[in-house]
Length: 126
Image (tube, rainbow, N blue to C red; front, top):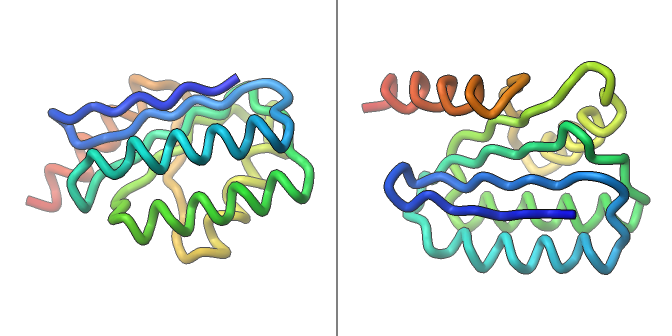
């Protein structure tokens, strides 16, 4: 299950991916996300909520890497990933993938904490 929701006012994307996501759904998520990211201004922030995401296959991970690379090319700025320690394998998979395309996501334990972290980081950049 996935949901990609853009916030044009804050210039942010909140994506949520959870459960066991097969390759077809992973590709559908990627296509939907990349289309929606194009409606944001360069420098947009992303909140990736993967609290209940189950690690994907290698083919799914390649889709993830390509999606992260394209998001960066479109103009992605700061990234906060919502994770929990009990789901460290999925968190490590996403972090390893993002490192491979040149960025490291900050981590938070809730949507509220992720929003607050981005508010603080973005305020520091102005």
